[in-house]
Image (tube, rainbow, N blue to C red; front, side, top):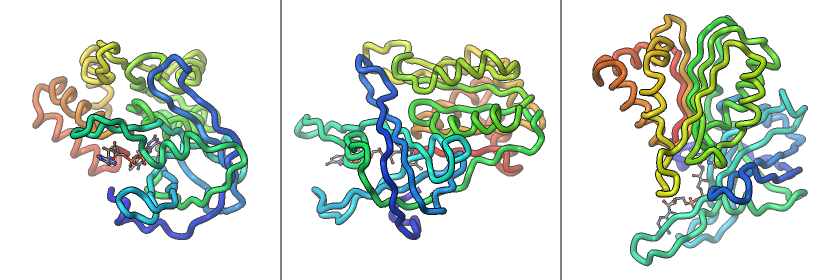
Length: 280
Ligand SMILES: Cc1cc2nc3c(=O)[nH]c(=O)nc-3n(C[C@H](O)[C@H](O)[C@H](O)COP(=O)(O)OP(=O)(O)OC[C@H]3O[C@@H](n4cnc5c(N)ncnc54)[C@H](O)[C@@H]3O)c2cc1C
């Protein structure tokens, strides 16, 4: 999805109520949850939708504003009318020529915002992740890093509002356990919901800066994952960085005995509306 191609619609004002660090100070990654409040009816977000944040320029490359999208992690269904939260990873990038590290504009702007700040947002952007009406439907959910954000809202819907009975497998994680966000919420659900099975995905070599290893986690649970994916009514949800989608396809091709077999099953899921992804 190209931001330039999106019709962001009207801007609406929102106030930052709280800006809380989710990862502990000793973790290398900084991920924060920002709780917002607005009087605008537009903010009736659903799991899977995003909000557009604009940082006024001028910026280094001459743009008047710098717009980035962030997925809603908690919605008004949990926080009350007019409230929603985003979870934001502080980004920086390495200039390959100078070797200097530069801060990402929007993520650093958000991570540094003080409580009470007023800003102008746009959205909702994107289609919500649809939850099937039959609460016995099996679900496979993949949300690594900040890709867990839409599933924070979705798990609330499944277990607080709908008493979900179907099997739910959640693959979640980050480079290390310390950087895995919402793991407390996930553990709490797994204690009381019998059909819910979380699988933690971390890096095999965290000290080397390697990312989480989704392929290894899928191959470790290969029979379970493949069996779930072949349930006639299964719904699949995947969110996070592009490479998570690529790793998922590669591991599933191996589990299925070839890229063609996995491609055919994926196409079936897509064409029947049972495949929902949000990769960036
Ligand atoms: C639908 C959607 C949902 C998303 N949801 C979330 C979410 O829930 N949480 C979250 O944290 N993120 C999310 N993102 C990612 C987020 O939108 C931003 O892309 C991210 O925060 C980085 O933005 P930034 O402005 O901080 O960095 P930017 O300033 O845009 O920099 C980002 C990248 O641009 C490149 N770059 C920029 N300037 C230069 C330069 N001078 N030289 C070389 N390279 C450069 C680098 O590769 C750098 O890594 C989502 C994205 C999409 C599309």
